[in-house]
Amino acid sequence: MHQIKLWIPDMIYHTLIHEAEIWRPLETGGSFMGYVATNTDVVITDAIDAGDNAKHTEHSFLPDQDYQLNEFQRIYYESNGSKLYLGDWHTHPNNLPNLSLQDKKTLVKSATTPESGNPNPIMMILGGKISEWIINAVQFQSGCIYLNTFFRCKYTKLTYEIY
Ligand SMILES: [Zn+2]
Image 1 (tube, rainbow, N blue to C red):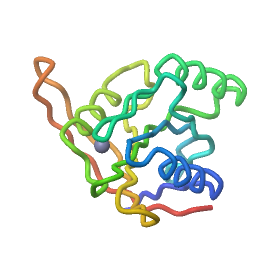
Image 2: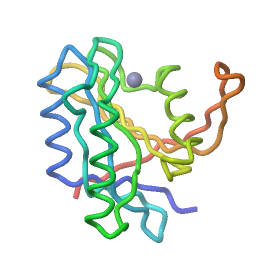
Image 3: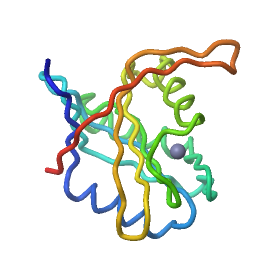
Image 4: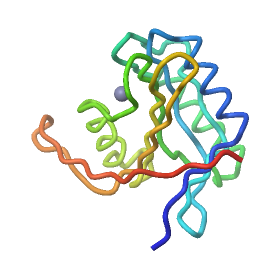
């Protein structure tokens, strides 16, 4: 079976590390656009930043939803629909890049919201200590939310390559 790989442009990789450093000790994040290759690899082409009205705390991050939506639409139309929503990223400045319960719930929500247009979104977390950001990237496989509270979330870890 093909081991799915996440492809991250060199410039975007450096931008994420830079943003992570600027916002430390607060969390930051954003989202990714790009495409899924015929071998099912996920290829990032564009990153959308947090936006001016994003909410950053030491243990949470909420992007500026209106700004993100405008950017999705702009990038989608400018690429004639070839660049799609791939998923999100955020930082854990004081912790390992493992998915928290809230992160798993966010991933299920993003996968099960038809408007996101992506049934297998990715989530990337940058965690760790100063100048030693560790990347953890996963892709949603299956799951659902029950009664708005309980949920099941199955995902697989992705390897990544910077291009
Ligand atoms: Zn998190």
